[in-house]
Length: 176
Ligand SMILES: CC(C)(COP(=O)(O)OP(=O)(O)OC[C@H]1O[C@@H](n2cnc3c(N)ncnc32)[C@H](O)[C@@H]1OP(=O)(O)O)[C@@H](O)C(=O)NCCC(=O)NCCS
Image (cartoon, rainbow, N blue to C red; front, side, top):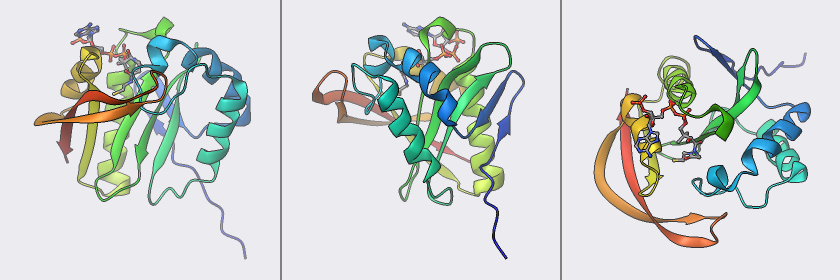
């Protein structure tokens, strides 16, 4: 007998969060190669090409979904618009990005809320942490709208795209 592993899918009003497929590499690379996107994340380098996106997809396809999670964010008309993930740890850490053509339409907030619903109902975790670079207030706004609170801690974090390891990062926490 063989076990069939099914990657969790989360549907929200306008979006679907699903595991990435090889065919997503081109749209992911096109959106994530924007310095304004990569530079606000910890680990997306700049430049970022299709081979980088293929590496990302392969890592997610090997992922142990009991420990961590990662979805592409898909819109039924526009296709892939971004990604959301939860990094493994005692307190899983949320990360996300939305491609610049799709900013300020509420997609990040909707995707994060959907991911947190899954965290509580399906993953059965009750604490998630997140941090946003101090020069990225839009991300702080997304996290506040999704129910995160500031802890008061400011950590110095890596930004691969900026080639820095000391970007002031405001830490936040969400409790189910
Ligand atoms: C941050 C990011 C995810 C937001 O995505 P989005 O889909 O535009 O987010 P939403 O539309 O759900 O919400 C954005 C909120 O930020 C607000 N905002 C936008 N620019 C802002 C700014 N310069 N200062 C303060 N708030 C700002 C918007 O008004 C909106 O809040 P509102 O609904 O209360 O008006 C997106 O810009 C992004 O991917 N940036 C690059 C990568 C990144 O920052 N990832 C997060 C790492 S922590």
